[in-house]
Image (cartoon, rainbow over all chains, first blue to last red):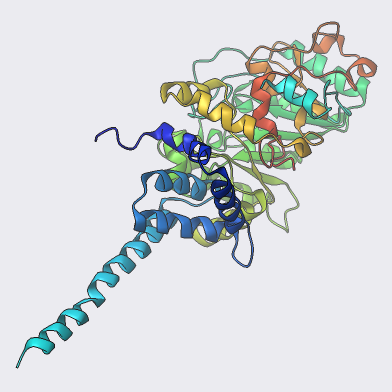
Amino acid sequence: MAEYYNDGDLDRFGEVGEHRPDLFKKFMEWYGASLEPGVLSKREKVLIGLAVAHAVQCPYCIDAYTKSCLEEGMNLDHITEAVHVASAIRGGASLIHAIQAHNAVDKISM
Amino acid sequence: MHFIETLRKHGAYPLKAQSVETLQVNVGYRCNMSCKHCHVQAGPLREETMALETMKAVLGTLKAAGIRTLDITGGAPECNPHLRFFIEKAKEIGCQVMVRSNLTIFLEDGMNDLPRFYKDHEVELVASLPYYLEEAVDRVRGERTFEKSISALRTLNDLGFGVERGGLKLDLVHNPQGMFFPPPQSTMEEEYRRELERRYGVFFNKLFTLTNMPIGRFRHFLTEKNQLERYMERLRNSFNAATLDAIMCRHLINVGWDGTLYDCDFNQMVNLPLLENYPRTVQDFDRFVLFHREIACDDHCFGCTAGQGSSCKGAAA
């Protein structure tokens, strides 16, 4: 399991398209288009990418979007703040469920 | 695919000079610093230094060929004992003079009056400052480098460099602090301007973003990390034909410390002189032959043509 995530595997992403290339092609077009500057700048988009990478805890995405952030001129402060946002939202997402627990307690309590 | 094949594929081979607007002269590899990204591998122990006689030959060439811009580089150009003579004479013949300075040299013994000298001779300064934060800069260039650089920049601002009222040019150079590409130049310039003013009260004219070239110390770093091929692949995949008009080799000739001619400073460092049949030294300079010469290329040239491109004046596309 120690070898489960290999650096080199990111470069092999295209191999996924060897099966059902039509679906992979659609994904790649969508992926590429979503990162093009629009109302949001490239910089904002890669920062969102970095935060999401941490929220979904994908090592490939973390490597790729950290590099993208540096290539947009950002530094460790930008990166760390973005990860705090992702983490805080994850934390908040758990914490808000305390209300479900409270409701559950109410439901079964006298 | 090699660089020359890539040029062929884009109908750009052979690559030819468009003019020689600038003579870029490397006056020696000695430097008070040993930065991790330095393509020259400059440092305090390097002994290659341009001799006075060679400088006189350069001055003769500038005059005879009608080249109006002298771009002085190194090492730290200030480590050459004849630098002041060189600048004085170049100004006398009407050249615009640029010096690529590491800034920290001004704080070395015997160098404190250099900023004043540069002011008196209206030298344009192009200064290395890889980032606007201390941690990032010191990691690449050595401890206390940032602090010294900010001190030097304040001195230069006080003398009128990089500030509107002064009228003296002070441009900064950003390069990535690792194996990644530089950010868009205009975005980074805006950020440098805002952060340097807000944090340190420092001003400058333009920011040039450069790509780290896969040669010199940066190549050693890539090799040590086993990332050379990966970086080269990325440079190759990022080839942008739109950079070809503005890359430096098409507008300048580079002179080595011993007078040898090169298409650029990077070619000098990989020992790739002008192609055969062209004059080899500054003493043999022939403007009619050299102004539209064919340029010697190799795979390191992908460093200048990747993405937004990279030239002496930053982004090329």
